[in-house]
Length: 114
Length: 113
Image (cartoon, rainbow over all chains, first blue to last red; front, side):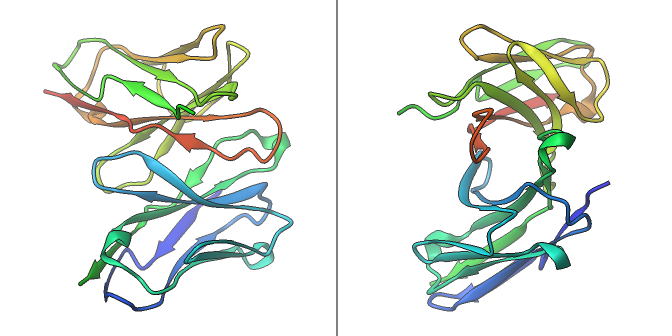
């Protein structure tokens, strides 16, 4: 059974700092990994999608890496801003033959202080 | 381009009642999945619909049922509501082929009293 863990559970940083969020998964047989952002009481916004054959994806100040063999992904946020404050969730999709359900971590709650 | 839309946004029910939540997928998407998110937790997979059939189901009781219509929209029904069913219910859509990126709606917040 796939399990996803996110460390740390909460993080508070001053504005402008570069930071790294971690995601680990127990079964390396994945189809892809997706990072999401969730504001309080809201839905999930897709940030980055990394296919199992890829090593990293970038979008603006965000960079996500994937090391499938070790079961790890990191989300790097450069020059953090107060507007980045939210909960960040990672989720993995199993191989196509095993269905398409995502398994989520419990998230990292990020606070960026002005 | 409309994203995933869900209704209602908030609702309050009492124990034992039944509820129906609705979802319209992102334009061009044909697959709909439903997730339950308790406060402070990651979303948990309920089930997925494709071609109007339930294709995969998570560890949820039969009180949770769904439907997909020919226009790809979907409903989630929960019968005999329990206090523990209080949660944010999220709908996600994707296309069956391609990168399989999931897009989520804003969710329906259900409170059971």
